[in-house]
Length: 291
Length: 279
Image (tube, rainbow over all chains, first blue to last red; front, side):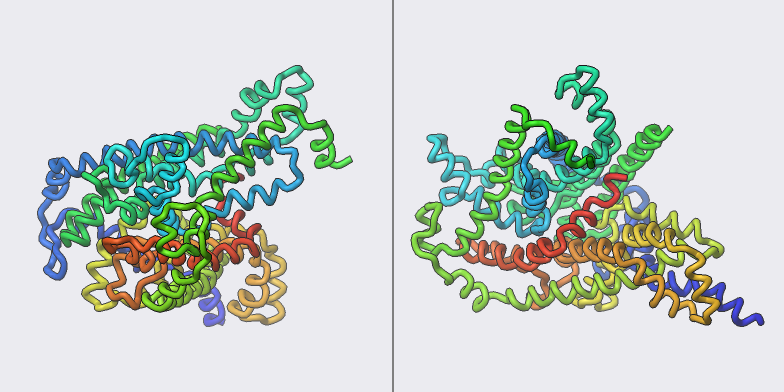
């Protein structure tokens, strides 16, 4: 009688084992190890040596880290603002659409999301290219001067912002659109019968009801903005003149070009703390939403 | 009268016309880079440097160069193997685990579940640094395993599977047990078919994450033969004189499979990627 009961008790652990073993090996273990390594001097094949907070003080003393942080935050604020405002506006337009092919339009907007970040970056390489790029062809046609988008430190970060907004806009618009569809029509109807203009309905009824979805969009895009790597690495390698150096590029260079793994682990933990802080803010804000 | 037809009845107002116009305009802008890439892929090198929008002569030389002079097909094969294997393993691991979390009581369950959930907000590159050191020592860099397993252990996947598995009626499971089915048999022939919508969503999530990932294979793969598509395509642009035509051909070719998959399964794709946003 004991064996079947024991087997029954073991079942959930057996079912969880494949997931948990890979999860511990590839996520949980490394996350904890990374914190420990951030207090060591660890270069490639040599064994890590404990050095206390040295990596962190070196990090905060390095002007390039502050450049990377400044670039990442500037990019983050501009990108998150432009992206969410235009996605929300687009979703409102989509909602008012009288066309029958709403779904086809939605699919069209969603298409850029499926293209990989790197491939999108390669495509935009040829849009921003000097002389032969689409943007400069258009600028010439309009009689505007030529801009070396990727070679001029004043414009390079804007090139990255344009590319990222292009790729993410449809995704966020579809999220906001789905949120709008979830708002019961009779609430809006009632406001309209009470004599509200379409703008007043949007401002005082739709947007407040959409707040949780907007919060989600802003938090998610902020987190992804802090992890910016693929596009500036593919397009400009962080240049020119460190104008597109982000924290993850800084981390990548420290870890895999200079092979200072302990130092890179410290960089990753600074960024992890920033992202966890945002996640906690999200929890608090959405918690208050429920109460 | 249904809600649908009621909503569509009022004659389109000026605002609706304006909204439609804006939507179509933005749609055209969104499509432009894709069309530009396709046009450029079919241009000869001379046409590209002439700076025209339309190709003067449609040419396949970019595609021929790409297939003949680079390891493109190998990269495509690598990406397919890695993404399909990650998806298959991930679906198995997440559905088994999600079902266990949903329908069994066992010591440590709550703690284990919270650890998984908490890990979701930790950025992926935090794991890259220790793993790079360990895998290098074990001599595992440059293997498919390294690219497959991290995506198979998808924390969000296990969370979604649990959500769906909770809805399976206990009576159904108990009936199966009374009929003498073993626990794995019960999972395979009763639970798994009921989880089909979740399988689609989680499958899409894992496939896209694996297919598009860049920093992970960039760090872990050492030889040209082992690169995945994004990493391989990115290496093509490191030359002094940029081969724009070939780059565009590579971009177009590598987007075709995922766009076809998207068009066939767009409902699942959109559900998968927007999961969690709207409750």
